[in-house]
Image 1: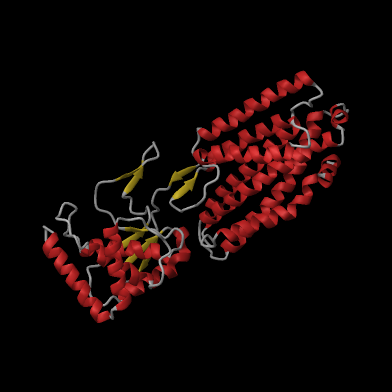
Image 2: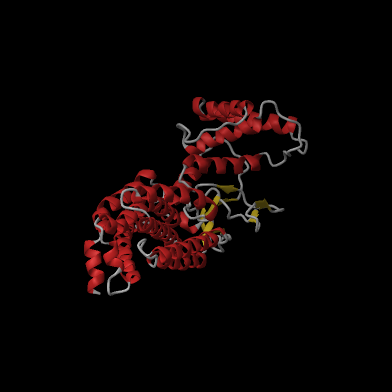
Length: 424
């Protein structure tokens, strides 16, 4: 125990804890703040911070490992009375503890600001933080392996850039560093645990790598490390961490002018939904409104196949909206689309084409009003005729008074359904 504490007190990486912790906290708050109060999104932000911390973890671990060569004590370490692998494991563990302390600060900061909302979903946060833990630990082991192979002059830089290239290539297909955490995606904790177990074996192999002074054993050790790295990569490639989540039996529903149902983890968006619904209630004319609109993926209108492709399900389902990043425009789009579909329910896709795109004009008018006006928070590369129709609808909402808007909307609905909807 005293030897372990000695390595902990003398580890080079202890000096990096404060800078890394500050960097990690800055990253989670600089990126955006919509995640605050939503446990899955908060977890994904922590993973994003862990990605950047892992780069420095690789470099710092490589330098901490290679310092014995810098002071020319590698041979003395190899010839110690105690087993060299045990000492190497103590040195690696001491370095890793300091790196994980910085990561723990990030995890705590994100948890503190999110817990104040009192929303459910803490288990999602735990899953994402374990993904971040995997990144930091694997980067540290990667750097330590580089430090065991290379001299101190280039070990840190080599570990930093090689880890960046490796995780950039392997990360997306293995879901190692997801960039968002929507509530309709769940984390397979069993798979994350399996990856961590395999990673622990890789760390042991790295610590047991003999010194370069023992040439034959060093080559054998390198082969063992390579095999274990291949096992880690194979495990990552053949397991799925993120999976589609089935609609919950008891969503969070708000019964207003329209009934809105959200994922329970989206509790913080209730006030935003109520603001949009209040604008629905003050529309200048009576429209055929949908009875219920649900959060994305709550309607069961799509299923995910084993090939990872989302497919439509035949049948009639509640319309959906997407509010995953707290955008009032995204919510307004979903509600406007649902109302437009209800108003023009008799229109079919094979009806004659309306050159004026009346349906799109009404949709854009609704979107602008429900969002509360102002500048849109998105861009589009839609065809010119659609953009022209949207611009017309927004212009009406922006420039005409309510009475004039009501007359215009009623006329567009009448002319469109009469002229272009065969079932009307």
